[in-house]
Image (cartoon, rainbow, N blue to C red):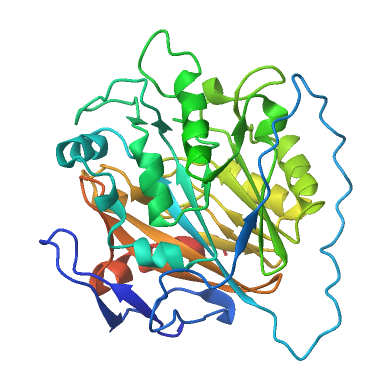
Length: 392
């Protein structure tokens, strides 16, 4: 049985909002003995300084460089009396500040309430990475709280994400070109990238052409360079080409090329595929295929998203693959499983990956994110464990 760890828990979000308390949680599913505990007192921010490599737009119609041969991680220097720095990366499920969430933001004139209960958890990480599956632009009209596949939020959402503590946003997603206006073209898409960069969040997985979309986001913490690549396969209208803006296409050519290129400038490479069927805790054949391809190409960890429900965790050749983290911010309250997700913490000692932690979450209809209470947390983790066992 996995060890019990301390996590911050709130009352179930189906009840009126109450204060948070530190409780002994249900066992957090952490296989292979890689358990660590969250600190009893969460600092307001990470003590490690983060240096981001500035985004460098490529010249028009660039020629993609040949895929480099994979080389192993750089050899660490001889040990010294000083222990390697402890570094934590945080990942969330899908973030969709649109439809009923945007309507609630408009009614309150406040985009920050969404993250009030998880801000401390996000900001304590050395690098916090989300997955944005909507546009952030002031050009499209707000849809209101209606049933629509046009997922648009206004520019205030970028500021709210920054104040919540996010550093990177994976944008190789299937709704990243949504606009809902016939003359929009790529305007809302480009606005999204610009709004994220305006507040200091690095978008990864999209650009003005395919070569830009394949560029990694590289951030350095305590001398360790973390390279993140993101590719998507769900909606072909979003795909970038040599002379077309869009997202990096997840396929057998681009995935290893992106990972191997990131390896040249990073000590740790994390692949973030946007993949898989909605509503299923079990990964499909495409996810299994690309998970193996990412591991073969040299990814150190694989963190996927899109499915709107939590999915299995699998270890392939010693590499952890997280197939889906569920919903983090969305209005899908028609099914409890779609209101649930996990915050994933990846722990490193220097460049060495030493394990992970899962913090179950629950999101309300208006987008407010809560840390799940003990019973709901146990339910979420049990679903992940059951799906993971089925892959063995």
